[in-house]
Length: 464
Image (cartoon, rainbow, N blue to C red; front, side, top):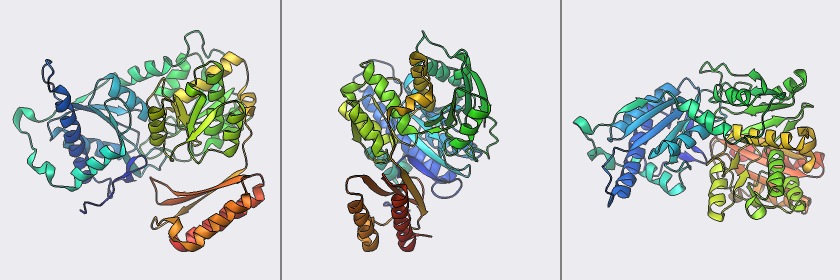
């Protein structure tokens, strides 16, 4: 293995299960490296303490993919081999793992999930003891340890080997935490909700939360088989819930992705309400209540220009972070903001959670609907979105677009033609071999043409 090999993307490690890098052998090494790093951090914190020495512990959860069993065992084996204990949680949303890592005072938490990807993929997301995703520097250290020989000499034996425990009541703890984000003076009695759990990690937790708060819940995609997570359901297919919302005459439709860290809604008329619209609704209500720190929201370049202009008109500033909820959170923590998110439906309410949580995001909108007495179709009118087009292109490599003259010149020409009345944003996915071309502007026909021209050039120079 080359020491220059890259494991982590924008959201952890991800790939086809049982192929590099998601093989049992490499995953075990990731477990060993993670255990070593956090064991050393724990030892450093204990120096000078009068408390008795305890064995470090790492929590592991997963979504509902078939390969989760294989990867869970490999991770646990690697961690225990470094003398660190493991708490095995089983199926749990990613934000649930972040919460439990912190509340159970673990030294780290690991979620086994490939988020919205198909079932044959899997991934690893790592959280530190405070429930936040690792910064780049710590991910780089894990990579270094995986590809080096440094860990070979650390092999505890006898009673110093780690132990794995199954935790049976974790789901209940997370459900209580979710319900505590909803005001005690409100309930959801009389409200009908269509809920799509993507046959993923929230298939148990999410229905319980909304039902225990009083809603009638029409459950969709809550029967995971290990093979059907995100299969024509979930946040990538919000139109399914949009149709069902009308069919069942529901008040709202809620669509989660495979690990439930993001949400897309549908109003009562069957129209999709995306992450930008949800952020705008929540930000304006938070400002009204004096709860939006510095009257600022953190988003990414993927958020619609209409979102930014609408918030500006309401006296709210928008700060843009790099794509990826981890980078949104980094800016929020650094600058002391408390709300941010992505167009894709990652919504981060730092007053309640350390990472994106789809159920929390849905609950916040339901709270606003209850307090205001307004339907979602009315609330979403707080902003007007510009037409936006996106083309995804599979690529064989990820060269800098600026180094490819034809692509670079086409992007510059498009930006000049839009003249401040639109945007062009071209980037590579951090989790898949895909280039994403996003164009927005006032005229749909014009931006469609621009997006297709740029996408065509990407296919020509970098496509499969």
